Length: 265
Ligand SMILES: NC(=O)c1ccc[n+]([C@@H]2O[C@H](COP(=O)([O-])OP(=O)(O)OC[C@H]3O[C@@H](n4cnc5c(N)ncnc54)[C@H](O)[C@@H]3O)[C@@H](O)[C@H]2O)c1
Picture 1 (tube, rainbow, N blue to C red):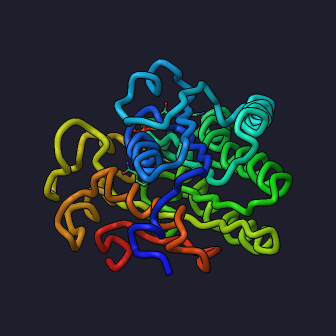
Picture 2 (picture 1 turned 120 degrees about the horizontal axis):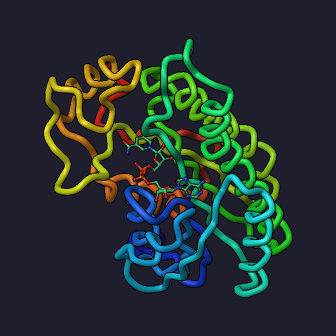
């Protein structure tokens, strides 16, 4: 019988985290590596991911999740190097400045966001499923969605992309269960990825969302978060570890809010 600490161990596992150069992704890469996995911390921007402080057991790599060929090549390279892929965390996502009022939105703006937030999740998940099925060890796919999948506010592109990620999670969970692959999502609420500790909520629109078409709606919700403060990236990363570890062997197809009660409003 394992102890609680043993269930959380990831020794011998190989994990890939996308968008790991900053914010939540960087915290997730550090958390999984700390639990013993060998982590490929990837980001579109290689310099950022190579300089992010994440600790041991890490390889850094440039990977643009919107580039389907690059994704396939990267996963093949990991399998050839490590002979397995156990965990994929689809974290890379964009939101700042890409909302825009729908009446002014260009095709290019819509595509730019969907290419990362939706296509990227699909490309990486497909590559991971292929690798995991071939390796025969089962696996875990964890998608970083958002409370915006359930409550509109950041804009039509972002909110739609995250709602689609939640449904992709459910469909892939159903399809991959027979291969021992669990597919789950996390819906973070307001998570402070800027300098300093997570601030208490306030009635003022926070800088990251000022200027977005529905900034007042989001600001209003943030000012009423039941737990009274933003999350830290580490608080999201701890729930990723739960979903990546033996603690959650029988959990698949769920989207777990990590939102301080945001969705209760
Ligand atoms: N911060 C929040 O309040 C919040 C809330 C809910 C959900 N999320 C989601 O969490 C995830 C991480 O958000 P964050 O706040 O840490 O963002 P962030 O901007 O701090 O970091 C995102 C990282 O993704 C990378 N990235 C962007 N496009 C990429 C691409 N095409 N390929 C690979 N990497 C790419 C960036 O270089 C950056 O390092 C996103 O999916 C976001 O939508 C964030």
